[in-house]
Length: 208
Image (cartoon, rainbow, N blue to C red):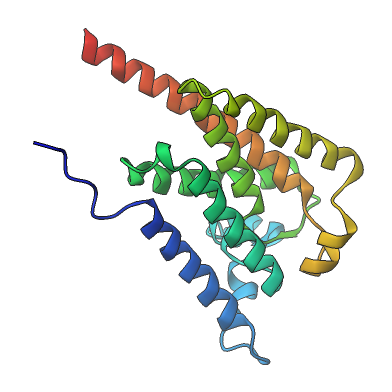
């Protein structure tokens, strides 16, 4: 008999995250805000140092303006669609990866960039997700994975020296935290390495 497909797929998770981001953004839009979302959930270094550790994750779900929100959500959907083959049969893999990348993003910024006092957005996580997908492509023998990996590394390296484009800065109404892109990239590569080790060991144990 054919294996039944999962009733909950990766795109269901995309919808959930998209709705959460939209609701958080909408709640913070009215003036005065319905609920000061940014005040309580954005990544703020000083607040995290005082014990508000949930900001390590929740800051990824907030955005500076509508353009920032739309660009990040569009990127999220495109990246998952691009690497759908890795999540289609195991959507829980995407959920776990998303949570790990968000948490590692916050921890990385906190440990290595204490001068970055505030941050919001999915862009750091998206760089990690893209890098993870590229490594998974390579493991499956897709030569396109090498191009994608070289491309994202080159982009992040360029940003570290020259910064983000002025047009993007103006569009989102804030400085692009290129530090988050570097942290996200590294976290994505680390997650891919850990996943590869675990998958290989599991495969070896099944064959033994």
